[in-house]
Amino acid sequence: MGVAWVLLLAAVPAWLARRARAAGQARRLHLAGLRQQVLQAVDGHADLLALGAAARAQADFQAGCAALGGTALAEGRAFALGQALAHAGAGMAMLVVAAAGIGPLREGRIGGAVLVGCVLAVAALFEAAVPVMRGAARLGNTAAAAARLREIGRGPARVADPEAPRPLPAQGEVEFRSVRFRHDPRLPLLEGIDLRIRPGERVVVTGPSGSGKSTLLALLLRLRDPDAGTVTWAGVDLRQARQAELHRRIALLAQDSPVFMGSVRDNLRIGDPGADDAALWEALQAVGLAGEVRALPAGLDEWLGEGGRTLAAGQARRLCLARVLLSGAPLLVLDEPTEGLDPQAAQAFLAELPRILQGRSLLLVTHARVPPGLAHACWRLEGGRLRPA
Image (tube, rainbow, N blue to C red; front, top):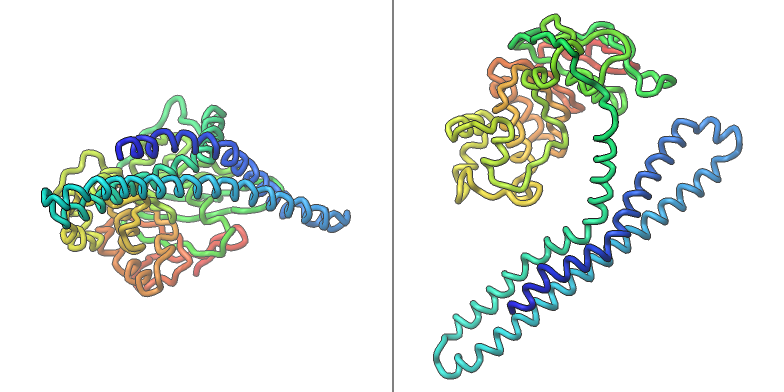
């Protein structure tokens, strides 16, 4: 059993990672190429039609899809082979343990329950090999993505702190003044945005997909700088302030905020690494999760699993909100916080926000219907401009 265990947790994953590495890297490259093809086709569809090249572009795209499918299939086969080896090793180890226990069982040195328990324990022990195999099979894909991230990290920063930054007050009014921004100079996106969020005010922005709502948030967090106009905090242009100081005043709950593999406490302390248990329970109480966490066998130390798979979608969303509350930021920015929730859970989540915020400011970007009394101001972003909703 020991030999099988070492092989499955060391030798087989190493061999599997080497086998799947080329397929994973190729898959990442094909996926990036397909994204580029789609963007180019959308941007130049008029030229493709005018030149009669639409059929050729479609054929190229189909070829790219076929290549991507081939690499995904190769990666999947490698993972399936790793799983088969894991199950085969587990089966052999179970047979060895069962065979070794038959003699002592006949002699009466062990009971039947003990032998069955040993066999089942071996089966449970080898279950740990499955996620190891999955990680090994994805290593090539992950390594290619990491290489691209390193390349981006070595490039010039989109935004930089000023040489002589101005301090930001702890509280302040956020104001967009005639803000204009385009990802592509030929494609309009935000054209003259004016928006004000006073301390303690709750503002909702709606709009169709692609209207620029996420870009609006990127400008507020200074992940991008506007092409024209200004975004200010308490009258200070964000370009004149340190980014770290700004991010202590604005906390973002993105629509894809993850629950990490770890305990409840680990996930909450991302918002405030120095928070004690009393602060963690206070945040959980604010979002309505305290009772459910207290009911868990280990409480704050309960292990949540990969991607928070032990939590329901609503629980995961509330846990991420509690993490944001712990940051202490006076302005919370929620980007589609009800994504993935059923309509009843979404409305319940939104209806509780005024109580949860406890006087903090809110900028809520959502497609969902907003309950009465939530927003002090509601805007719709369409055609590059904000209009009262």
